[in-house]
Length: 85
Image (cartoon, one colour):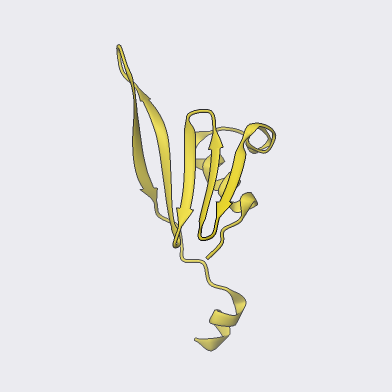
C-alpha cells in the first residue's frame, strides 16, 4: 500500500506544525519497495505496510533524545476494494 508524497507531507504537517510548503522545499522523500519515508530536519515520518510512524526530537535540559510513535489513520481503501464489499 503506497501513501504517496502528498499524503505523507500532509500528515507530517498536521502532526508537527511544519508548513507543507517547507516540507516540499526542504524535505527528502525516499521510496524503498514497500517503505516510504520523508525526512525534514530531525523529523522522520515512515509508512510501512499501512502503518505510519513518526520519529521526533525530545529536548530535555542537557540532552536531545528521540521518540517514535505510531499515528492512527483510517484504513486506505482503493475504489476496487470498496466495490467488492
